[in-house]
Length: 272
Image (cartoon, rainbow, N blue to C red; front, side):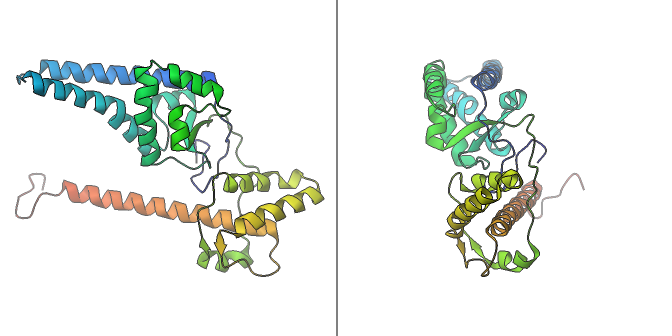
């Protein structure tokens, strides 16, 4: 991907946690944007010609706060795969612990916990938790299983993933379960560093990781398959499968959007 992240299982170009200063800058920008959005929404509510009683007015104010603090951040973070405006400007992204992209569940947990640790405590709880955690996680990250990484200035992989020709047919039909957090990333990093390792270390490490990965693949590779080729085949196939799923989801969303824009049966479309 152009921003330094591949969406395959934990396949990340630069998984280094973002520095505290960078995270703080991104958070400050996000807070500023959120406050501006909230002020605009309140101003629009105040200028509406409709008169609300006290009960409805209070309900609308609560709805606006939920919209600004939860709904909008969750939507933006989910659709952008972990990048809000502040994170985009700071050059960071929120990813899962295994390096993969965040989904709705992760963004929702982060936003809900963020209401308490960021807004109700003016960021004090998030500050303490971030400084005490090795990856700079706030409480929302700990519960969601996410953390912020740098995506600007990543060097990229020096060794591309390749599908060994003699394993292509096996990989297409093999059942590959989701790899646990960090295992796919460790395998990808090893493949990238393998040419620089001593032969003995290279063989030992690839044997160990291949044995761990093989527990999540059925049936196993053909007898006599080199461990390094096995790792290449699994990561390559997992990446292609996830890309295919993402493509199908985009096509489904496009079809759904076209359906929603069509008028009901027998109602003339003024655009036609």
